[in-house]
Length: 97
Image (cartoon, rainbow, N blue to C red):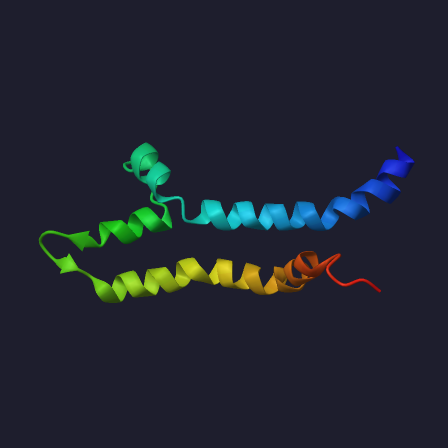
C-alpha cells in the first residue's frame, strides 16, 4: 500500500487531473440530455439559452450573449489553470536529453 501511494499515485496524478478536466469540459455543454430528460424540472445553462428564442418575442440576443459569457467563464478559467499541465503532457517524451 505504501509503495502504491508513493510511486503510482504521483505518476498518474497528472493524467487523472487532465482526464477530469476534459470530462468536465465535455459535460458542461451537454445540451441534448438536459433538454430531453429534464426540460420541465431543471434549467441548465444551455437549455435556458435555447428558451430565449421564442416565437412571440423573437431572439433575445442581449440576454443570450450575457448568459453565454457567464457559461464560458468556468471553462476559460479551467483552461488557464490546466494550460501548463496540458503543454507538459503533450511534449512529454518528445525531446531526448
